[in-house]
Image 1 (cartoon, rainbow, N blue to C red):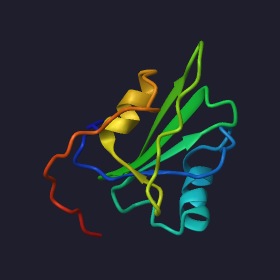
Image 2: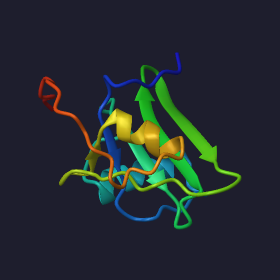
Image 3: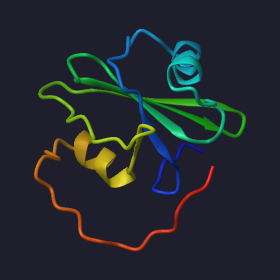
Length: 116
């Protein structure tokens, strides 16, 4: 089943990525560039230099899923990532939808701290 939601953890690769890379190449970036395990169930986000292409790599039961979007106009705002590159679901959706994240005020909400 193809599905992404707020229940996953999202990590942004901190450099422009070569969008010719597919499953194996992006997995290598996760493993060596992000020092993470690409099959841990998290979603890894890659942007190209122009920020008009975005790929999301996700391990689901049985194999990798690759989501790929090319913007015909405009750019994806680079979501603000935490120290470990983690971003939240809502910032990812806003960025993909073309909503500027600059100056957005986030209201305080309760959330359970994710482990692992």
